[in-house]
Length: 174
Image: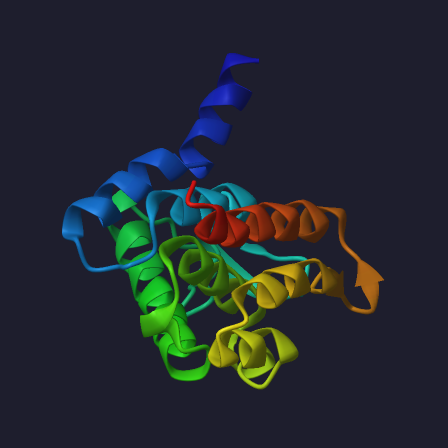
């Protein structure tokens, strides 16, 4: 039993530790709640694995330059995740009027851009509503993004509900 736990501990990493590294860099605009939402939804793995979409992944949802058989440190995972978050933030700024979105809406938009990919969200009704300034209607679009391979994914249902709550918190002042 102890040996098994040691193996698992070597593979899994702490989302909180990675968030701490990223927050200390002051490079991302995504707020702590957004980072926690994304990190907890993706989980953190030091070794590569195949995600539900069939893509080789490591760290916290990282799909760039993943080497099968490799194992990453917290600093490497944080650097990869920060790069991926900055790409998602650029997508939100470019296609969802991100610079004018309130904090919670911006962070929720970054979470879905990170998860679904910029090419899938950039022309969506969701991002069109953000661009037009109709933040509430945009937030209410999030629960529609729960499919993978034509099937509803329970993990995406939970994630989108949390993204919607974060997004709507911008409107209620929470």
